[in-house]
Image (cartoon, rainbow, N blue to C red; front, side):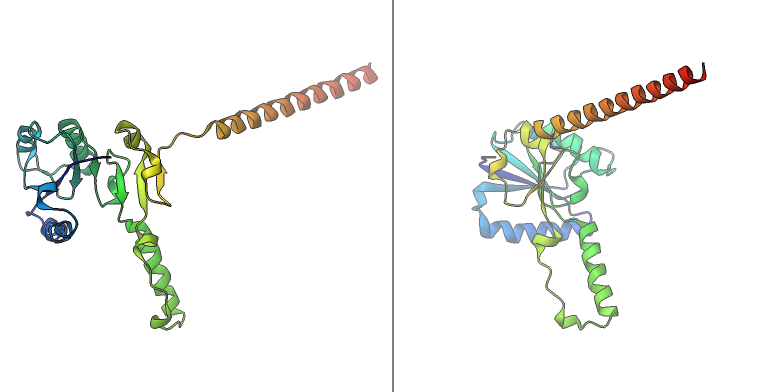
Length: 212
């Protein structure tokens, strides 16, 4: 969507959080001026709720770090995203495939399962005698696809035409053509079943007449 600022949620109490914060800080500085982004680091639920009212209206959220409740407990992915959705009411993006379908808009997600399959394929090739330097280079487009949630796209009026080419959309309702085809197949199946039933009754009546 159109936006003026990016809120980056990070943490520094986990090793992953520290690494991500540094990587994003270094990268985003090369893409946007400092006035277009800001960080909230190590904030718990209460602190986020307190600051929510001061967010600029056209702000999107990049959720990278773990968020703790007021007791210092880190909830699961669904709980954290649900809280951020309810409290901030802004489009939420992330890098992790396990968060899609739970309330984030989407993005270029790290697909751990796909990476595992690709790594296994390379390992098998090497075990079968193929030289490692002859194996193809796996690019991020193959390992980490663009995935978006239809419900979130609709909620925030994000035009699907603006998504990157090749993006996959989950939770998309079936098209009218697909629905009509399904109903047509069901109708044909019921008709065939009815004809078979009538044919069976016809045979039974003929057998009964002959035996009478």
